[in-house]
Image (cartoon, rainbow, N blue to C red):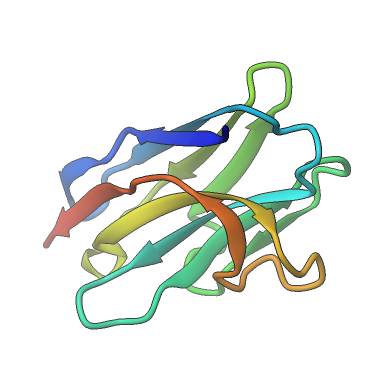
Amino acid sequence: QVQLVESGGGSVQAGWSLRLSCAAAGNTFRWRCMGWLRQAPGKKREGVAAIYVFSGKTFYADSVKGRFTISLDNAKNTVDLQMNSLQPEDTAMYYCAADCRDLSSPMNPAYGYWGQGTQVTVSS
């Protein structure tokens, strides 16, 4: 049984930083990619950052490039998202996801496993 558990969300002011962490448990050895996606009220779920498990190649949404960094610790089975210079438009529920369905499109919200989500709220 696979389980993804996120932590690190919260409420901050614009310009502050947060670090989200996702702990994975279960049969993780076949996963090819992991990602962080977010969904704001009334909006579609969108990819924020993704990483190939074996090569470490990373992908970012244009809106977060230069501010967010995704990192993977294979030994600990964790994937983190460092978020700097947060803006009100970053406010959303953030989800950790694993086992992307299309390796060529890891930013698409098509993953086999999802965490329960952690709320990030940024005030101006």
